[in-house]
Length: 496
Ligand code: SAM
Ligand code: SF4
Image (cartoon, rainbow, N blue to C red; front, top):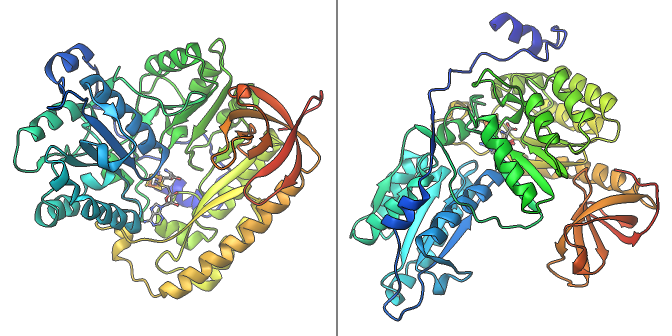
């Protein structure tokens, strides 16, 4: 395996797409069903002294995976008898669902926890909780116990389903109740969920990550890759379609590794199976990894009519030495070949990416390789970050000689290049008619509707809210860098 990886890194391997990098372990995780009746029987929350319901508020940080975990936890709390609150002041349980990917997100959470402390004097029943990726870090657990003892509940990413039991224990305890599991023992099915949106829904297909990129904390906070059984995924999607959802996003850290641990199905096969569900409208997926993005998968995306033409394909850097030090398992050449293959098979595809600047050892020349890759690929959009050292990850120990000022300057220069590309690509759509799935009203103007093309471009146009959940044809009149403005039209020929 070592030799194959070396060949691929050096661009000498005729892309063995279909090869699987050897970090996978057999899946020891057990599938269990959640007992909702037990939840309602054992953990009902009752009423406040004045007869009003207890209320909760979940503050979510980070990725779509966290957003979706919040939907699961909201479902559990509603089943316990809590109601949702949208203000800190009226909530009896405030839960921080946190992200640990970059340091500034962590600092924000601790700032907020400090800010909310005085609310406990006003409402003695108020409980504060911390969960998500930060809770998995031992440093954070220690910090809570030593510096933020007014946090009542801490639990991790592997025992979300235990929230009712943990919260009930915290109500009866004077001290912080902390229950963080080191790894996932179970894949828990049938947990109630409260979906935030009525048009779009997320469906987990896989948990965790085995890739161990040297900068990234996710394999430590989310554990090893575990795929859900295909029957469970299909059942959930069927139910969502029956409930009227129009767009399903299949979620995982490396969706194209879906099924590697199961050994019975590939991601390409799962996409085809979801595509065949009667009544399904749009299917999205995120995040893909360039490694193991097989020809079979490209064919499935091209051939499945409901699978949209958008691939988020994080590259991280355009320089081979930096990619090697990041343990990304792809090279610049491999990535560019993959992009060519994808563009050939799916001509109108939209590609987006993630890029880190200022990784330890990144020279100006290495950074220029990233700029040239960005110019070559012509991404529709890129999420760009300054490298943030994360405790206990290998890269945190790498010597880092680039100053913060230089890193900020690289980020600015990278964004300048990408913004120009995004604008130019959007301007090419001027006068074209695109198919938009209407998501709802604009937050700032109720007469304007927002929606997305299959290629994930955000479109704003005047219209009536009765169009929510429908497909409309919109002529693009004012393309901008991050969105497209237009007018609803009725024409036969549409693009994207
Ligand atoms: N699994 C996805 C993948 O490999 O592409 C991405 C998951 S990660 C939560 C989202 C993005 O955060 C990464 O693609 C990377 O660009 C960025 N990221 C992760 N760790 C980082 C770090 N230590 N500093 C800066 N950015 C980081
Ligand atoms: Fe992090 Fe790499 Fe896994 Fe993505 S693939 S979650 S960047 S370790």
